[in-house]
Length: 95
Length: 321
Image (cartoon, rainbow over all chains, first blue to last red):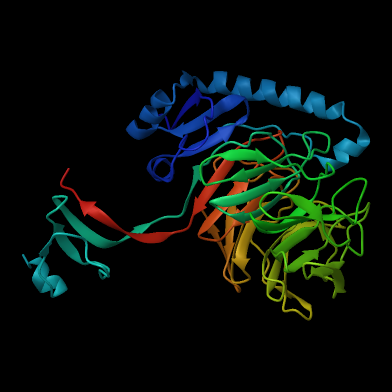
């Protein structure tokens, strides 16, 4: 049985997810507007209401990987001073 | 089967409004709304999304409360001078600080705030905000960035930091001038502090031994810093706050290999894990209290705001479906 729904949705700000949402289902945000959502009716409804697009886990992971690779490339190109101010983006494995 | 009045010793009252001071477990019928109501339902702590920053950035200063927050300067990458105010729903850009600053630290309220230090280039400069305009404040005794700050405009505390090496320096501010105060025990940068000028807590950070980051915690009583119980999750560049030494929070950050989504609460003695933030990130800023906290920004650069509501007990409708 699936544990999570994977999808993309643009964070529109206040109310994008509420305290009640966080009580009702698992939710984690990732690069590339990827969201991992607990697999239940309320989670599925949340993604639909946010105009989200459901993805397979592999598709979602590929989106995250692409954004992180781009961010790592951008970080590698920073000056040493800027690197000291920041943090090289680390790889993320979706649950 | 025993009835409610036998179990609870009370009858279910028929009321036109909710009672002013219901007891935990008390049940009543609200005839105005037509709902059967109960008090004493535990609601777990959680994070909800807030309005997005207008300018995504990290290494910014934060101060104020969950519904009246100030975000100052930062890095995206490159120091910027942007200042934004949050009203509990959305961020609005207001007057810039006079000089772009990154790794700057702030304390106070949205209408009486101080933003101090920052760099590189590391600076002693501080600025005061009155809710509209920025003016020059006193100069820190030791130029630095990545410090932790807490307190009010007229009673602030600024500790730790970095100028190429981690520092133990601590200074207090009286609204006019900075005074060197006793040093923290462990030199650190990118920690978080909370509380008042004379009852503060310095939480975690990155010490001279490098990764994994520190879970050391120190308390200040106005005279000296004392090591107290360590946090559970070592981290640096977390986001946190708290008006009291005995009620602070820290969320997110990094332990070196991993970016964290963990939140911990400190009650002045012990640490406890709480609800995780939704988007793991580090180097944003935080403000507010342990029961009404806020974090915003972070490396990405990130524009996301999350609002924390501590565990509470509420009145709920009793439904049958």
